[in-house]
Length: 227
Image (cartoon, rainbow, N blue to C red; front, side, top):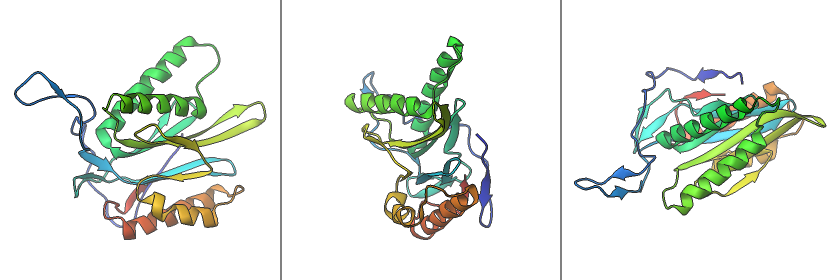
C-alpha cells in the first residue's frame, strides 16, 4: 500500500492526535440521556479514485475543516486496510477514526484464523455497507462517504475492485468514483478522460487535474494532497 504526499506551495501544521468525538452517542448536558450526533464537526472534503491498468489509485487533499474554518492541514484520509485494500473518507473525521477501529478489529480477527486466506476489497466493501446501513437504521449514522479499492489475486489473475458506500448504506461498484464536491466537478472529467489501459503516470496526472479543479472551486479544498 505505497503512497505519497504532494504540496502545491506551502505546507501545514502537524495533524492532532484526535478530533471532536462526534462519532458516537453523547451524554446530554445535565442528564444521563444520550443524544445522537446531529451534524458533523471536523470534516474532510472530496475523495477521488479510479482503476488503471495495474491497480487502483486514490487521492484527496489533507485538509479538515471545523465548520467553515480550515482547521487542520495535514489530515490523512486515505488508509491501508489489510493486505489488499485502501480506504478513503469524506465527512466527519472522528467517525472515520471509529470506522478504522472497526476495520482493525476485522483484519485482526481475519488474521487470527491463519487459514492462508485474507479479506479482499470486495469483502471489506460489503462489510462497510452493512455497518453504515446498520448505523443509519439506529438513527445514529456515521457521517462519512467511503471509497474502498484494492487488488487481490483471483482465479483469473489480479482482480481490481473499486466501490463506494455513503452514510445511509447506499453502495455501488464503478471504474471511477468521487465523493463530496468532486461528485459534481471531477466525475465529468473522469468520464471524458478515463481509459481502462491507463498507466500509473497517466492516472496520477488525471487525479491531479481533478484535484486542481477542486482547489479552484471548492472552498474546503487545500493545495496539499495525498495519493
